[in-house]
Length: 50
Image 1 (cartoon, rainbow, N blue to C red):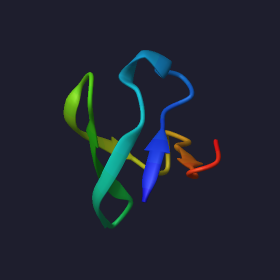
Image 2 (cartoon, one colour; image 1 turned 30 degrees about the vertical axis):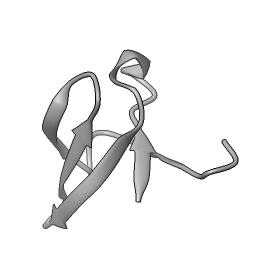
Image 3 (spheres, one colour; image 1 turned 180 degrees about the vertical axis):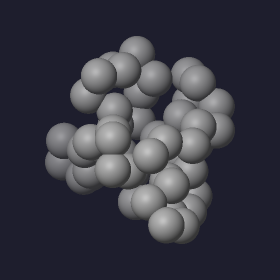
């Protein structure tokens, strides 16, 4: 699954690596691997057509 962080658009589109107990690990091209709290950060799913 691919996502973006609307509050950090410069991170680019990242690929979700895992989701465990609300903690989401995403690999962003401009930021590297980031762990976000899915309860606090609203990631937006990115589809091929977007």
